[in-house]
Image 1 (tube, one colour):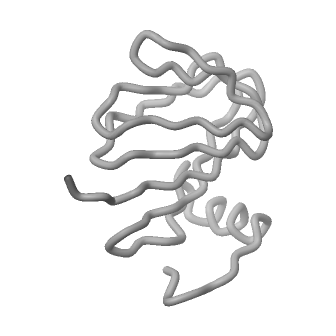
Image 2 (image 1 turned 120 degrees about the horizontal axis):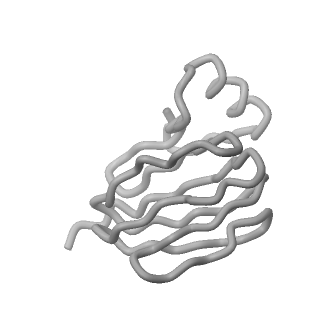
Length: 109
């Protein structure tokens, strides 16, 4: 996990995620911010539940749709998607393997 400052390389994070065997690798986690790499394969079902913190997704690779309650957003390389805390959301129609950089605010209300 990150200290006061640290640099990261995507390929190394992908490798670590692969070794870990899950679809989420958290690489920053402190009292103000959490960040990770989220990966879903083509055709996967995204089972995430609403989170306690505001969240930003930056789509690195792949294509899917992000459904946020009754809205849908295209998720493709370069897309930046925001989801407020405690709101239902999920990636659907995963057309290509998806790699996403995720940021959680950890802001306390």
